[in-house]
Image (tube, rainbow, N blue to C red):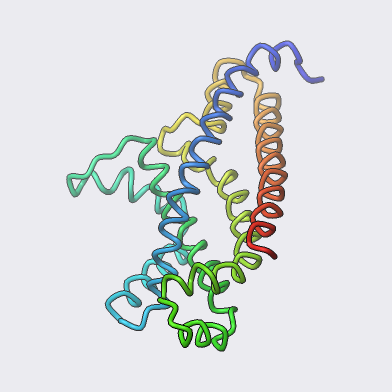
Length: 219
């Protein structure tokens, strides 16, 4: 039988961890979008000085586990004289990781736009930036937004790994409460429920944002 008294008593502590999880996810998503956009444009660049570093970044991040990346940032960088807090390390690691996947999503959406339309825009005297904003991006958005939303959902669940670098988010909060309550089933069950609530609510919000964004672009 579930110990509902323990669940109700410690629920505020788990909720506090869930709030931190959401905060980490949102910040990491924002930074990861910047990393992803820069890497995507770098991979599309003709200049190898931009293309090769961007390609290497995407390759190395996608080829290694997120947990190892977090360990390198939090435990490895201090050996080089760079010390980051658990929060900064977690956000940086998650942002770099999701940024690599965002880069491929953004690049794929941009490349899906017909070259003929781009050439027609340039023939009308549009600059590269104006072509991107008025021609390429509106058409790429319908391909980019859904997978970016999926990346965010995955990001929320991946935040559980930052517990390994002592960041007290939802998972580590549950682990610490287990140490004092000896109720692993109740604590992990409530953590799972809160993760499900976070991902479901995020999915609904992202769906609403997708419809609004595509409508704004006339799609």
